[in-house]
Length: 582
Figure 1: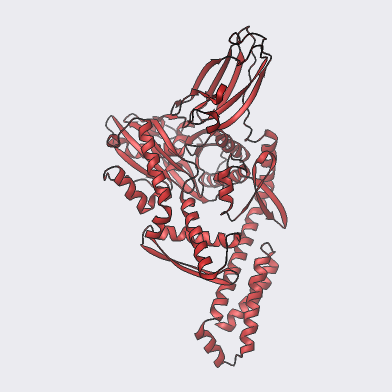
Figure 2: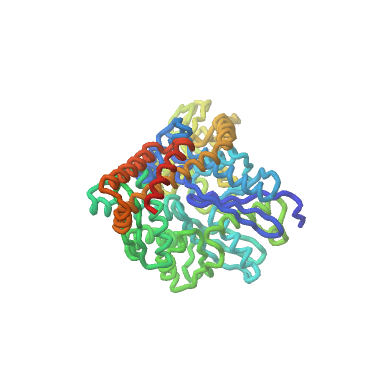
């Protein structure tokens, strides 16, 4: 197979860690990037999940038009608001740029991964974000399915006939579990999927943050729960501590001047981490059991358990999984951070006609993770497409108006597993008018549900009794209009030129704040004070330096977006103090 054509790229748009994968030199190449916005994609600001997250995020979220959540920031001393899709598109544009630099040519197509449990709104929002970034989406693929592709390519030579694989994908913000079959001809068939779009490493961090907020309050009688800057600094240290205790049994968190001039130090053990997060760990194991039950498989029928996502490095997760599968050795042969992007890159190569024979032989059968149907009388949901149906798929069903002489009906489209509509997620609704006036049961309405290979749903309805053909397609209320998308594309180009300078200034501000905090710690050191006294320092001299440092820290806290000249002036002032203390 020729590789002269420019391949599409594969993108793992992670919650905390993103990867781009591209086929080059007869292999997949991986490049990484960090960010955080996926939890807002396709949700409303009033969503209970968003409201809970807002309490712990270090950035401000407000409700925009149609209850769409917006991230409020100050950019060049001007208030700006961005919807989640806009931030996500910036990340996608960056990944696109990284790939273009690597390949030395323009990239226009991509395979993008999404959590298996993303609903239709979230999928459409991801597609919108890609369009803003200038990418045509060849395919949206479930994250665990992408990981299975990576695993299958690595293990294909060892597959004899068929094997059953369970992919356990626990990342920064989402959790997916899927059961798949892989055969020796390269066919990957998803049998069942489950999980939680709001469960991952960030939730473990949140529990740690809450724990230390309470510890700080207990030790210092001060509440930092409303201080975004303090929470942000604490979150960074919690995330580092979480990584450390995956290989060690305890660690220490040290933060200079965390809040109101108070330094914070605390020991944190692996046992305490497991205690505060056990409810989440058990939730993961329950999802595995449910997934196996959905596909009517016993745990003994699973040939391999594949770990994907950075959070699977947590020892307790591995221990509980091994217990669940009676001590089975877990597969950790593929990089948990890169497996999803790797699989997306392989599928991108397959769809764009590049790659070797093994890549081109790949055949994928994915599924829809949740049931889809319409609302009927007495709050009953009539399912047209059941959960775990293979996609793409098209299903039709005939309904009748509920009353005599009814000339219009409202069709409510739901997604979920509850028999009652009110327990499911309302995707959208539309009205079908112009029905002939007739007795109940005489008018027939044909409703058609169609899911494409990306898992995106289209619904149409038509009255068939007298041959009239009135069809309507759902337009997703939570997705972006074409006008909004075009405006975002223009904005993205405008901000792109200023982005690098802005980030450089933010880093300089952070470095200078850390420098000032270290000087404040140093001036309090007994040995330093004794040394300076021997050179003639008086009590008033110490008080003057203390005050100068405190004023510098206060100024930096109150001026987070100053220009480089002002930062340089403050740096000279602090460097003069550093010279005195050296």
